[in-house]
Structure formats: C-alpha cells, structure tokens
Length: 389
Image 1 (spheres, helix red, strand yellow):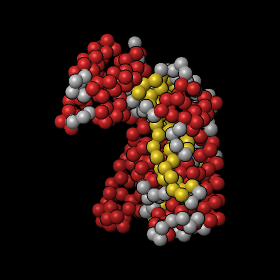
Image 2 (tube, one colour; image 1 turned 30 degrees about the vertical axis):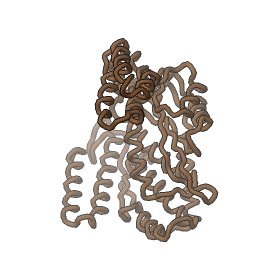
Image 3 (cartoon, helix red, strand yellow; image 1 turned 45 degrees about the vertical axis):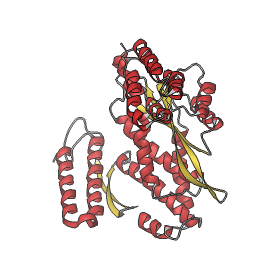
Image 4 (spheres, helix red, strand yellow; image 1 turned 90 degrees about the vertical axis):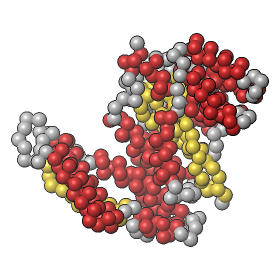
C-alpha cells in the first residue's frame, strides 16, 4: 500500500472512530493518525515502501517501539517506527511533544508553587493526565529548556526583511501580577522564506529591552537587513535607530489605520477617513501616494484639524514600502506576518491565565516559535523574490 493510500485509510478510520464514539474516541483517533503519520515519515526517510526492493533505499525498518504520551486528551499509546541504524526519529512526534510539554509545565508550575486558584489542581490533572510534583516539573523543565535555549541562540544569517512585534502576557513577579512583553522577531531571507528569528520576554516594551533583543540578533549573525517593519511604539523605534541606524523603517499600515481612528472627531466620518487612507496605501507609486495624502490632509483641515495634522506627520512613515519591488509590497507593508503566531499563542496561553514566572512564559513562547519556524522552513516561499525586476 502506498503512503498516500495509507494516509487516506488512516484518516477514514479516524473519522469513523469519531463518528462512532464522539469525543470519547478522540484519543484513539489521534493515536491512529499519529501512528500512520510516523510510519509514512519512516517510509519517506528510507525512500522505500515496506518490503520494497529499490536502488534508492537508504536503510531498513526495524519494527516499532511502544511509547505512551500523556496529553490533554488523555494517554496516547503510540507505536514509534524504528530503523536499524538508529538515525531516524519522527519529527511529527517531536514537534507535538515539545509544545505539549511546554504547556503542561506552565500549568503544572502554577499548582506546584501554590500560586494558583482552587481550580488549578483539577485543571492540571485534566490537562496533564497525571498529578505532578515539584521534582517532576523541575526535571522536565530543565530538559526542555536546554533544547529551547539552543534554538534561541542558534546562528542567523542574511535576512532581507525584518519584522518586529510584541504582545503581552500576565506573569507573576514578586507576589504581584504584571503584564510582560513578549518580543518576537521574524525575517524573510534572500530566497523568500520566512523564519522566526528569536523571542524574548521582558518587563515592558521600553527601549532598553528592545535594544538588547535586537543587539542579540546581530550578535547571532543577523545581517543584510534592507527594511524593518513594525508598529510605531516609541521604545521600539528608538531601539531600531540605535541598532539598525541606516536601515529604512516601514510603519505597519494596519496599525497606522487603527491609530488614525483616534483622531476622527465623529463616528460618521470613520469609514470615509479609513477609505482615504487606504487609497494612499494602494497608490501605484510614491508620487501618486504623496498626491493623495496631500489631498486628504487639505480635505480635513477644517472639519478635523487634529486628524489633518496627524496624517501629515504620520502617514509618510507607512510609505517607505514604495521604494521596494511592487511584488513584495503586499507582504512588507504590514507586520501581519505575526498574526497567526499571536493567535496560536493566545489560544495556548488562555488555559494558563497567569504564568508563575518569566521562565515559564518564555518556555511556552519558545516551544510555539520552534514549532512554527520548522513548519515555515519547509513550506512555500512567503515572498517571490523574482518580482525584484
């Protein structure tokens, strides 16, 4: 049976289990899919179907090894494929276990350190599938952190476009709860691939934290940056000027459009103002964009003078993109590259609520970043660089 046929068969069986057992069959369905996914991955690694004789074959299968994986949907009794030379380990299993461990540890630490609500013990048992002790948490955290630390400090290379973004998570510090900034850097390399370059958790988005974060990227070998794309946070802008003084800056058009609404005096004007700004953004070249901006500035001089002045001073910061290849502009005029990561991070951190400390937050953010970065590294190009002509 071919890999494709095996895959379809496993999907059909999984669907049948869910139909018959509802959510009670979810664990069995996931187990079935994982086992088949790992088997297919081994076939691809060996470059040969089971018992197939071929010149391309690279090694031989060596049965399966049982592995019990405790997850949010219960225990999964997996059959991990083996090869004779021990050079194979299913990446699908590794990716799933890494983010699962990070999430478990974040919740478990709340319980172990006695900082959680009365419901955390129940949540921990349901999420992890077993009770945890401080020793268990410490041992598991150390092993996971070592791998994530290697990823955060790995060497970088040339990246044409650099995107910067931040979101906030609640973290306990010195018996108080505060919002901590999760800083994330994304890059698009010279081939058009997008990658996650690094993450950091800091007290705030103040300049010193952004500056240290950006400096760490340079120390790891980041170079060749031709454009920085971000929101207009003052600390971030100051840090960018300090670390990348000669690199042009593109203010995120999406966030600028949102900022503009604060200067619109009447609700009835909001849609019209948004349309006028969008027309500037969608102009075919810089000359037309400047003409439309001047027109909008004059249009609102009397009816909304604060908006008019704000547009004149701020909108040009979002037009740097006009100096870059037209085929690239849609992808580099906003920092929306972070949207999916932020959405997934929010989904994963929702059940944690308040992180017991910074390391716990950094662990989960890093695990998610590694997972997403690996997916992007083998996916299609984010930007088609052939459009540079």
